[in-house]
Image (tube, rainbow, N blue to C red; front, side, top):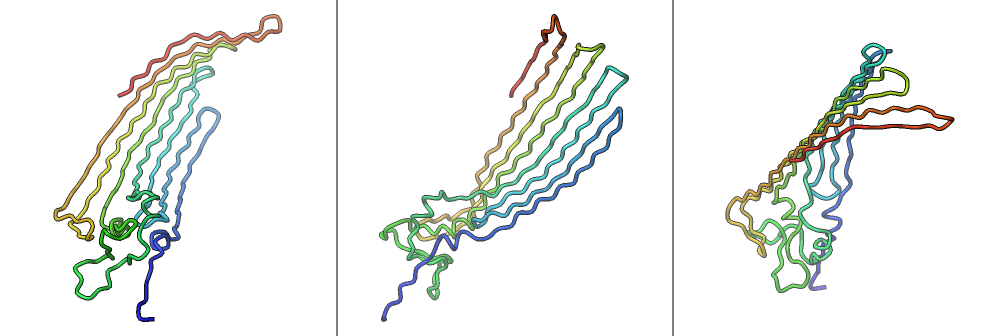
Length: 231
């Protein structure tokens, strides 16, 4: 034939096989009066969509200790850091990309790197492959959760437990673009978009519980208080 029409399988170009790496290191020790547990983990998940992925570091540390016969105290701590490279385009936009647009521009002496189509063509004429590589977006998050407790059991059936703890989270999302020209979309300057946020929660509670039997009936009495602060 005089004319050969080439088309692009955008699903094949945008999606690929990916690997998942997960490493965990655990430590535990204990005895009659004390128990400790620590864990360090790392996850590296490559996205099946181009330029996407997720990484996470996590640290956990827990202890339980007995002081004498009727006092117990301990703590729980978890800290994590995550970094995500999200997908720029929604799935419906990917399905609407014009199949007659090539991934890269193959015309000689063309000023364009990625394939282009004029806006008069049907479907989405934005080169999604190009924009996914041009737009550098990273979402980072830091999270923490910790608590301590004191448990007192002076005699059978009676317990008094006090707990105090809190959580914190901080996130930083930014997107950076260098100057680019995709024919239907153009940017002449560097742009950087940022979004920051954080939050904390503090909790504390104390409960006195007494369990006993009365004429073959099991009875539980409880009294206590709880407070919470969110910011």
